[in-house]
Image (cartoon, rainbow, N blue to C red; front, top):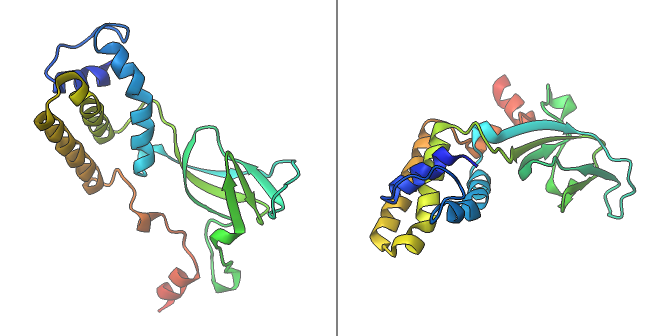
Amino acid sequence: MDIKIINRAILKLGESPISSINEQPYGHLFAMIYDDVRKNLLSAYPWRFAIKRVQLAQLDEESLSIYPNVFQLPNDCLLVRNLSDFNKVPDLRDFKATSHERYQIEGDKIYSMWNKINLIYVADVEENFSQLFKEAFICKLASELCLKLHQNLNMYQVLEQQYIAAINQAMTHDEIMQDTQELCENSWVAVREVW
């Protein structure tokens, strides 16, 4: 938990900063919501600093599913963005059709027809945030407690507008991936490039 982020949120609420998370009356309130708000914000958008790519190894575990292979999701996985059994298709002869019918996610496991999986996911990052993520996080923390602390709907609306502005700015500055940017290269792309 970053006390600087919490103090910025407290300042947005017009209050004096705290020196410790245990300090009353704000420290314990922010401590209660900090991780949930952070994880929700990380999961809501594919922030570039939180994207990870890994190749999962098959578990030596019998599958009780219709899919014969079992894979463990990484411990820090908040959201699966993409998974496949290939990274790049070099030409049309190597084309492999993929579909969501070839795997199923249940809990912290992936059951699949594939023998190996390349996974792109949003990781549970706890520090080293991008600057615009920090700004959006600060605004969201402040807005979450605004009505509890001040019962001021106008202040809440301003904080939500600042949050939306920070998200929009992050998208403009390419800190948030757009869905079209993470599509795997496939035969359709290869055909288009030949033309």
